[in-house]
Amino acid sequence: MRKPFLPAAFAFLLAATSGPTVAAEKWQRYTNARFGTIAEYPADLFEPEEQPENGDGLAFTSRDGTAEIRVYGSHAPSTVTDGFPRYRNWLTKQEVDEGLKVSYRAGGKDWFAVSGEARGRIVYIRVVGDCPGLSFAHHVRIEYPFSDKALYDPVVSRVAKSLKSGGCRDDQK
Image (cartoon, rainbow, N blue to C red; front, side):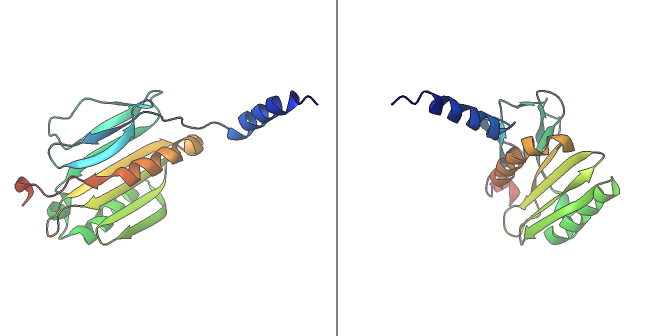
C-alpha cells in the first residue's frame, strides 16, 4: 500500500498553519559598560545604532526600520524621585503624557512593566532595579507597529526576560 500523499499533505498543513513569524535565530547579548545593564536582542532582525556619547545604553533598529529596541541604564530613580517604587509611577506618567494608552501593568518590589499603544504602535517597557539600597534602573523599551504585533510578541517576551543587572560593581556602591 502506497502513501505518497501523506507526507505532502503534512508539509502543506504545517506550512499553512504556521503563519508569519519572526524567525529570530541569532540572539546576542548586549552589556552596557556604564551601568551593567544586560539584555539579549535578535541580531538577525535588529542592527545596533551608534553608541551615544553618554554611554547610557544602545538602540537597535529592525532591518526594515519599523521597530526599535532600546536597552539602557540610568540613575533616574534617585534623580527624579525618592526611590524605585515612585520611579515606576513617574516613568509611567511620562509615557502617558507622551500619548501612551496603557493596557498592561505588572511589577514587583524591584521591577515593573508597562505596555500599551501610542500612535498606532505598541510600546513595551520593562525596568529592573539594581543593587540593594541603590537607585539605579535597567530599562528595555521596545516599540513596533501594531500591525506587526503577532510578529514581535515573541521577541518582546525574550528580550524582556533577558533584561537584568550585571551585578553590583565597586563604582556603584
